[in-house]
Amino acid sequence: MTDPFARFADWFAAATAAEANDPNACALATVDAAGRPDVRIVLMKEWDRQGFVFYTNRQSAKGRQLAHTPYATLDFHWKSLRRQLRISGAVTPVDAAQSDAYFATRPRESQLSAWASLQSEPLADRETFESRLAETAARFPDAVPRPPHWGGYRVTPDWFEFWEDRLGRQHHRERFDRAGDGWQLRLLYP
Ligand SMILES: Cc1cc2nc3c(=O)[nH]c(=O)nc-3n(C[C@H](O)[C@H](O)[C@H](O)COP(=O)(O)O)c2cc1C
Image (cartoon, rainbow, N blue to C red; front, side, top):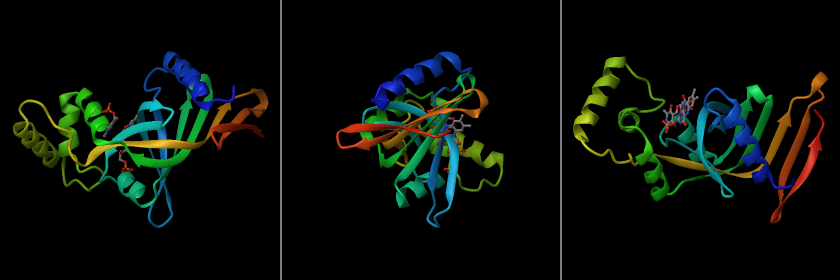
């Protein structure tokens, strides 16, 4: 199979069937303005041939890093399948309509949190956050609109690496590199 998206669909379906929770959880690696790496878990919420989308606060540490260096690598580890998948490429903000549509599916509490949380900024105490949540709930008694600073990012792959555990650390690694309109598949030593 030389289509990494078809391979992703297979592996993601298997992970969805096998994992106890969050088969869409992946590490998101970014680089800060000083060139240092950073990493945290996000949930991959949408994907197609254009790429893999997660949602966050664009003023967070990761948002600032992506504004400076718009490249990222995603790393899924499906422990029950003993599989790892890395996906790396350029990152672009998801447009407003798509971000609005996703935000509208979130529970009200999560929507309020997106307004009340100054994600990654220091928080003096828990009460400060709770009072911001209460103010936001009073401000939006009905539908909660998407905050302007909250939205999606799409990682458009340049390469994928599908890794499978094998006995004796003789793992199987398949690397797909974008090549013109298609993909070049090569094995890597384990
Ligand atoms: C399982 C799991 C899923 C998460 N998913 C997201 C997510 O989709 N978006 C998000 O902003 N933070 C998510 N988080 C929180 C992030 O890991 C992180 O704490 C937060 O985004 C701040 O990261 P930053 O300071 O590097 O910007 C998740 C955490 C866990 C453990």
